[in-house]
Length: 486
Ligand code: PLP
Image (tube, rainbow, N blue to C red; front, side, top):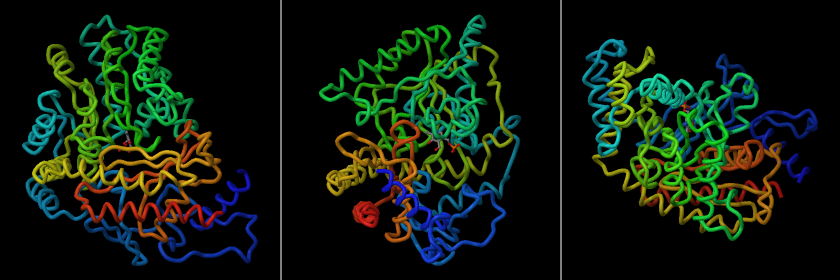
């Protein structure tokens, strides 16, 4: 496995144009195509060593790079561009808003477009949620959710000062800012900053049928095991000190589209109710239609007290996210101080609201969520058909148009590839360079350090032919990545 890993790492480095010192000069090469890059960039890119390909335009579901290469964006960027690029209706809505006013201080003033967006969002919850707070990113939304949970208990009973703890799950991702990262369980994303992270976030296991269930265990037994674990955690932390239990309904970027097993969220909510804690659902990635219902919680038989949204909300036309609170939380604040103790310069940005409102209208008017459900079933079926038997595909899972493929070096033991092999990145590069497709790579799938997956999150507007095309390109990409390494 080690030499395979080494070979893989070199393959990856070569593909992204990073030369290892032990690659002989004769084998060193300057790659062409989408990897041709400017010599220097003033942008602090993710990699300071090899800047990424430059996008020059995008239309529909396709991205074009500076060398003229076109790729099918089968992940909507980071599960964002759900209605595709260059939608004329959204462009017009944004320009119309700019023509009225491009900014106002939404901490002091209201505006019609903000009211309309909040009405649209609350209506979409069929009366479950009460108020929406709009800001710029998923991380901000999660920070707001944490502060809202804390404020709720302080307003409910100022003597509840001890409610300072959160319980979140292993392997999760809730954002990159310090509060949201403290809630995140993914070791790889946390380790460098661990000393800076809040100590009051406690951890329970993720719900992961592939990695968490024992052989022969029933779903009911697994749910009971996880509920008992959560209950024990409340007891250990102090049942009356917990503000909220926090979870993604479908774990996206860090585990690769892992849905919960049936009955899981109902059981978790019962434990929260037993101790009076709130349920915060992070639907930044899995929400707004991505998992086949407008809200992922609709499939779980529970409703959240606080919910966050982002990516599909504005479809990438603006940087926009939201936190929604239910009546329980809103009523306590209204009866208390009457103000959320929080604020952002760009909260409720009118142009972002205009973009999100138009995207959401399009999703509703064009019945795109039912298309997600229908095409998602097809995508899942094809991925299972094409990849279940592959010797290095451990698991194919997902919901709606949100599917993950976990790669393992041994299907029987579920042993991952060594991190140095960078398998998911090799698949990403193979797809980009040879099959004209963009997939979303992730590492740390097993325990936050080891394990690889790639995920797909196609546009809600995808047709049957496009889904067949994506599944075929995905199959070829995975087959060819491993074939070129064997
Ligand atoms: N929560 C989840 C579930 C996410 O997937 C992400 C981003 O991937 C975030 C929060 C953070 O969102 P952002 O990157 O917009 O800050």
